[in-house]
Amino acid sequence: MFFAVQAVVGGTFTQNVMCAAPIVYSKQVLAENSHVRAVLINAGQANAATGEQGWNDAVASAEALAEVMGMEAKDILLESTGVIGK
Image (tube, rainbow, N blue to C red; front, top):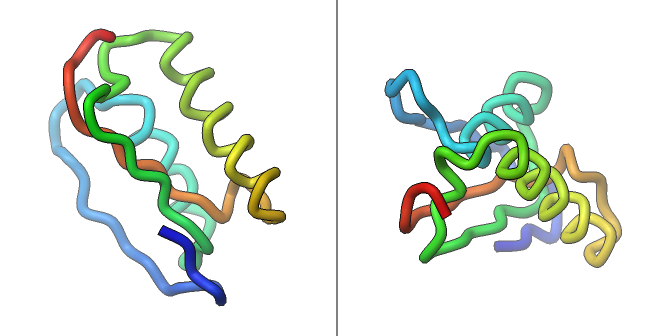
């Protein structure tokens, strides 16, 4: 999803101790910002239980979208759902 102007956002996240990288990333974004310009939604691959590589993939996906869209990675939230551990 892309917003032509910065959109006011909030988040409701799992209370599970183990959170997928996109959740951790989005929590960090929302801790620093109340507005975003885009949400990158992925279905089919949860990016959970993937360790450091999962975190690197989450950051890289936000950075890649930011570059294409002409914004900063901190302006993007990530959402993923799907198979855990892949």
